[in-house]
Amino acid sequence: MPLPSLSLLFLFTSLLIPSPISSSPVQDPELVVEDVHRAINASRRNLGYLSCGTGNPIDDCWRCDPNWEKNRQRLADCAIGFGKNAIGGRDGKIYVVTDSSDNDAVNPKPGTLRHAVIQDEPLWIIFARDMTIRLKEELIMNSFKTIDGRGASVHIAGGPCITIQYVTNIIIHGLNIHDCKQGGNAMVRDSPRHYGWRTISDGDGVSIFGGSHVWVDHNSLSNCNDGLVDAIHGSTAITISNNYMTHHDKVMLLGHSDSYTQDKNMQVTIAFNHFGEGLVQRMPRCRHGYFHVVNNDYTHWEMYAIGGSANPTINSQGNRFTAPNDRFSKEVKTH
Ligand SMILES: *[C@@H]1O[C@H](CO)[C@@H](O)[C@H](O)[C@H]1NC(C)=O
Image 1: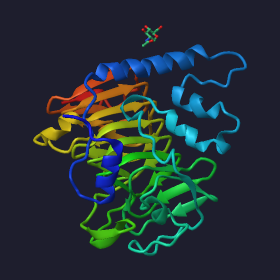
Image 2: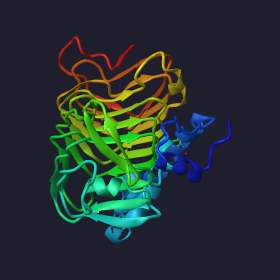
Image 3: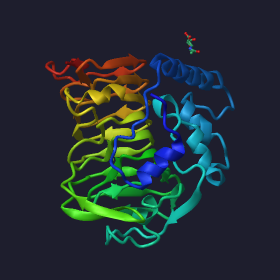
């Protein structure tokens, strides 16, 4: 099936026709895996005395630039893996969030995060200062947006959190996302021209539903009502990298049911994450698709680390697993 052009995808999503717009999977996922190794190798080669490199190809790509703050949008070219082509708001204006409130989910005030993420144009969203944003309802994102928390301490906490539904090209970077709660039974705006009724949401940290070209990088996530990052319903072309996850039961669900075979298209890279203190299971829990789990550090789990059903391909490479002391929880994997 030919891939619809990006502009067409954008048109569809901005009209909010809730058709599955997930892009086609790449033909040969092993090529993407090899590309990840090439990027890691290249970063390691540049390690050395007086080099700013760390061996982490994503971080080295932007942190080695002393003027990164003036060149924020370059971050969009630093991803690796299946979500590598997520450009977020790279080609748009900078939008500065100055107001931490979220009092009206239908008519959000200019200057708020919600006002920024619903716009149709591409936007690179940054924050004027440290802030805690307690959302009134799920933050329903429109396509081609980056939320970039670098340079400020930004918490999205205590209310519903981020929803990436039937949209494409999203980057979420540098946020503290925690204590996410269920929302819903309310009207919520998802674009300048449309708002609609939301039923009860799960209370995920980041919920990806029929989304594609998504990169979730360098966030700390903990203690949410459902998953920390869940990707379901035909979502694909996703990278989840450099995140620090703690204090949570069902960490990451990739594919929600064995019978939803459209998730065969799901391709996800999980790289350089630290799965830390107080985690229980699903790091990740996979169905159907292709999952490259590479160079993650697992220091705590109470039940298991990686799980799968419905014929997923899980390519686990270079991970470090430190099993818990409990002798009934030594297994890394579960079926
Ligand atoms: C990366 O480096 C390793 C170790 O030197 C090597 O075995 C592997 O072939 C390299 N992979 C790529 C894709 O360059």
